[in-house]
Length: 494
Image (cartoon, rainbow, N blue to C red; front, side, top):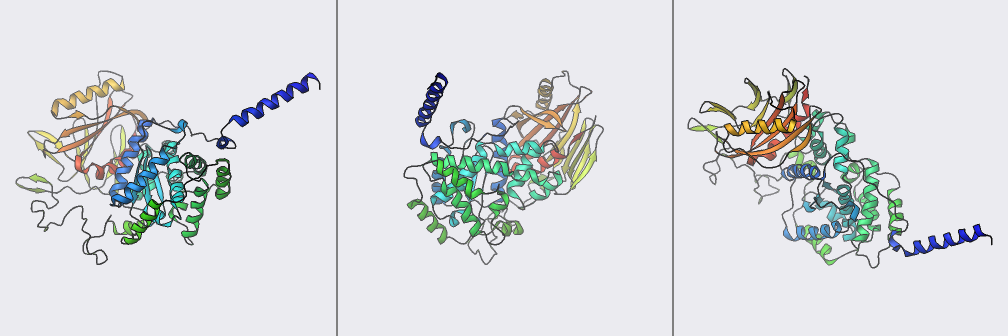
């Protein structure tokens, strides 16, 4: 054997030794790389929290402590199995059950994870349910939601939250209509096949790390296909098949050898039995058609359910409440809910669309858009409780941060209860670099807490452009989606 041959033999031996030194479950794994993402991890959490508030406002969360505790235990076990390179300390994974029979599950940026009751009932064992959850956790860990929403930013400002909401809520309530008004293509409302495959592969790895058989992830997709009927389950329409899904997940699972994996548990069997004893769940289509999270008490199919968010005016349990919340000359003032139809408005240096039932109220510095009953004069000062104010001010500094600080100081002079409730967040406003900051206040008009969201950017003239969105604290979840839709229409034209 000559010198070159001996060197080749030594190299081959060293390579074999190094491969044998690797844990057996690392050999043959497919490498997964998270997509580029311009958002900060804190932004994932912020956007996810906003979307989760909307989900829980429109979807019925199952109120059963035993089922909820069980799903949380499985979720924590899976989240602890996320590989170190995809662990984000800012994320706090949570797990809730949606009381609907649709075969679906989804997760929002930051870790807010939801499993439909129908999916738990359809799974053959805990491993299959865990497979669906691991897939969704993978979307969060890889930050697919904000990565995909960032693509929509090329076309519409403010698309991030709306895109996430559109992906999840679909035809529920008015969200779908608002998404359409934003002009965001369907591509941004569902994950791409590339992201789906990444979530499959990472999901298999998470299952193996958590002690489950990753083959059950493939089995779950097979179960969904079989149980979904001719049209296929909701999961399959929201999670496009990258092709040969069952086969490549099983190949990945073969490389992730798990000793004595968990397939089924007495906890899973117990939870399925509990769900069977409950009243059958409605579909999301039925919930969306009725426009109610829960049926009204007059529904003969649900005689014992009385979950009206706002009681009837003649309800004797609430003698001082008739859904007209604000006083006016000793009487009651009603604030109409914002219309989902938007109308266009053109200012000197911007264009914007606002609900068509909001009035425009010009002032020296800008325009306030607010519904009837939501504005008044208090001690000679104009005050509004619901709506948006757009305007500009001469800034002493050409720094956006310093100019925004100056504006907040000016606002504080006229509102002694105004306080910041968070730090600055980088945004895009009218396709320009911008800041947003959240503030709280006690309304001079109602005496109640309110949330004030401030957005700022610099005009070419050096003036500071601002948009202020205001809503009572207890109604902010209802108004937030309207504010997002309006922000998405803003165009700065100076």
